[in-house]
Length: 273
Image 1 (cartoon, helix red, strand yellow):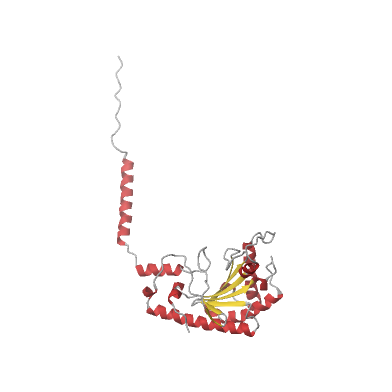
Image 2 (cartoon, rainbow, N blue to C red):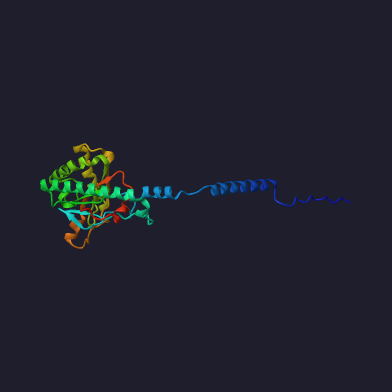
């Protein structure tokens, strides 16, 4: 009679490797919890870091944009402030009185520069072709698109070349502590050509054309210039009328301070008389 084989019963519990692995994961968790518990957030440094990302021109949809405000004098407008990418704003009182004084000083300087530009344009016969606006960190020159380009094209007309050459004189004078942001805008009439499939391409080509003129003919450092095309998506007024479309077709040249901190401060600064 054959003997019955004894079957070995498996060991109860988890395998040895699983216990080692579990210990390792637990130790890692404890290690990172300990690091987190020892860390602390410096509120002042955090706000400073967030402020450095605020009001960067044209890096995101819904970023910063100039808004119209009260006419100051001689065709120059002071704009209150710029919408920010972040909802949480650092109140002016938290920035300190020293920063507020600095902002007021910069606003006075910007007003002086804007008035000089306007007087210069008036002297050269371009008082009505260019609108000058400013705040403490930006001086914006708005040029009607019809002055610069023929419909559906991005090549500067002879009259446009003269105007850009005139503007370049003042731009170069103020460029030491500023950069140039050139923005192209169109109306909402569609375009679909081999060269310009949409208004985006057309508006950017127009901004680039102005930038090339400043670089090639007036030796402005290319690292100081950025060109952006917004197409039809940032209108100043309704596109339903020919007059409205003419206003929306434009090129904006913005002289932007390289060392500004917080354009929200403009909301707290009173008009400089």
